[in-house]
Image 1 (cartoon, rainbow, N blue to C red):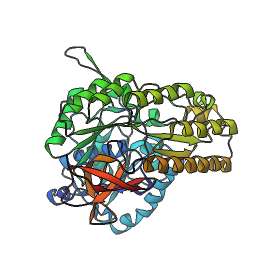
Image 2: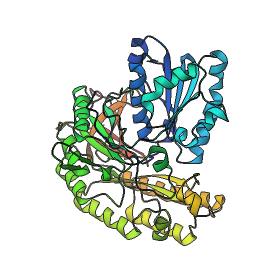
Image 3: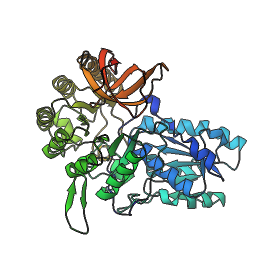
Image 4: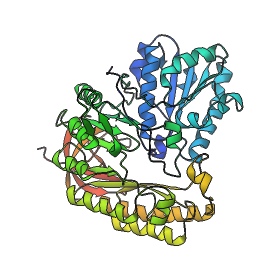
Length: 479
């Protein structure tokens, strides 16, 4: 446990790859150690949801619940949801229908919805649709045991109140990723940016920065337990700002990065996500000065058109974004870059779309999360702008964006052939027990022969070939 001090959890909704959506958290030691009722949890959407699920697991474990990896054995099934796109919500609704089989087999079993979708739909899920027994928003997880008691008694079990203070700083998350090598650390909650297309400020509330010393303590504790990489999470990490009540000194994100990096040279530090309007040269210089702060930045552009960016309320221009890219490449020359792109936003013309393609050509991102615009109820865009780009046009533009990104991903990965990288070994390759995999400093996945390596080791790998998403190499002489 850590001191209960304000922590900010401003995290953008960074979607996970399709094979990670709806992933159940794994922790066999909890399943065997706990006595009482069992819970099962699936997480959808962003990295913050996966981090929040570890907080939920900690709270439930403290109240006598054990974790099961089989939802058919669970007394309490929880879905930690995402509301950033309609498709994400439909996936959850379909999953709720599938889970009805549990209620048929175990009438006393309960289903709960957590996260952003719970915050957006509130009591409708319990009262009108009767799909779930419990609804709990992102700032109300401490109330989950009480909500379970209410549901047991047949009462309405809903708490979606947002908080200006809740950061869960005093709760040590139960690390449920079976690898034991990489972990998330939430440094803030909420978002103040008010992008016109985004529901996050309404589902996660205003920004709150977490006590810097509790973040460092969490990183130290993880390192002591054998973890070798942490990712600092926030909707917009660059706006992290914590004021020390004892000294009234302000800790910026750049200063926080250095504090975490100083935990140990062998602890890699990543962060997500940055906002183009806020990422500073100080952050870039901190990255350049510390070898263990990874040279990788996820910098969502959303659109290459200044006109569209203005309607999106992104508060930067095309020119500003490109200047930040230039700064990154000047100060951190080997930095990996990824982005988010939305096609077919309200009023987007063909000329706007071509500007998006052209900025992709100028930057040549390593990777991108790409989607066509999905109107979300309650957002500024839904209230102010007509969703006037036909769906077939949105999809055609998206396909063009995907095709161009695939080209540049393949090009960027091929440029690494012949180079030797320091790789943190994470786990055994899914395709072969003879191979291991891990990531470079630039966040590129590398597959290589196992040799005598173990998860948590640092090894040097020379790249022999590449796809558009993976580097394949051989172990090089170790330094």
